[in-house]
Amino acid sequence: MTSTYAFQSFNAYNLQMSMNASELGPGPMPFAHFVVKVASRCNIKCTYCYVYEQADRTWITQPRRMSDAIELATIARIGEYLAELGNQQALVILHGGEPLLYGAQRIERFAERLRAECGRRGVDAKLALQTNGTMVDDAWLDVFDRNGIHVGLSLDGPPDVHDAKRRDKVGAGTYERTAEGLRRLLSSTGDRGSPPAVTAVIDPAARPRDVVEHFLGLGVEHVDFQLPDVNHDSYPHAQWPLGTFGAWLIELYEELRRIDRPMRVRSIELLVGLLLGAPYGGDILGPRSFGTLVIDTDGDYHAHDALKATFDGATITGASVLNEPIRSLVTHPMVLAHTDKATAASADCLECPLFSVCGGGLVAHRYSASRQYDNRSVYCTDLAMFIRHVEDALTQWRGDRIDAVSAGASVATR
Image (cartoon, rainbow, N blue to C red; front, side, top):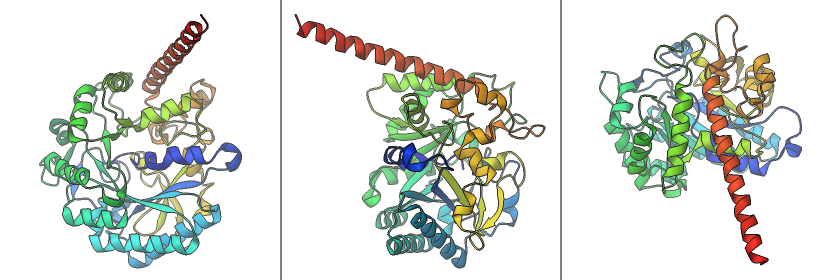
């Protein structure tokens, strides 16, 4: 489990390009991602997990699996909402816990029901799934392929990096089982159309070059590198002096510029897009973003999952698929905090010239018990370093292109 959803980058760029600000208007951003918690338990025990290992304890009273009635209501609400929007493309992400604990038959049933609902309403919802990979076998590949389910997998890097934080319930490392699941997924994309995206939580002790080379060696082409979910009350300053992650991200960026083989990295794609004028970002960067709505196993609507790392009950909205349409959540304060970030940003953030690019960072990283979310991100220094470095690189690139075009024109007129 990690703080954001790898699949937000699966269609976010296409959504940005297909919908411009004039089409959306000045109002609240619509939901484009629905994180459906079909299972509320996990078969491994990651030390940094915001669901089971941090401040929030709501999982204790959640049903272990989504019931048939809640599943039907969830799919109906998603179809209803998309029809109201006028067939905007959306992404439904089966999540957990570990969603494969829901069972192959139930996941296949969910896919069939979602297709039927979307077909009946004339709308489009792609289906994805985020897994730790330890349970993936040939039978699961068949389920994914038959239903066109795009799969994302959590893997932090080489064995020593991954196993330091992602261990099973008896304390054994999970790297080999996860890597085997990844190899299976990479060997057969079927109707899923694209290879699996990998979500990796950054360990600043691991060299970016080693991590990148490891992923490339596995055949991974798309990685979502994520900052650990800490805030002003939990950040370990002695272990990670301010700027630690900024330096790591800069080194990652330069490593990706150095290598010949392509690797897509979500944070870099978002940042470059914003610096070049993209109208929207994601939950981690940019002042505006398409919305993400979480639907738990009991049918309750929740705000962005990463808030679970802040305090107990932080994501609760008080609404459910059983009593509220999805459209009623678009203006919920904790939804707006992620989609229109100026509504919840600190005065310091709003006055900063980088806010138009960083958007104050992930909302959960701004939290402190004394001031709630009225703070700069605990990663403010790091984000500023990263943004300015990439901005300088883009400025240099543009200058080199202009010089090259000018030199070519000069030669042509001689």
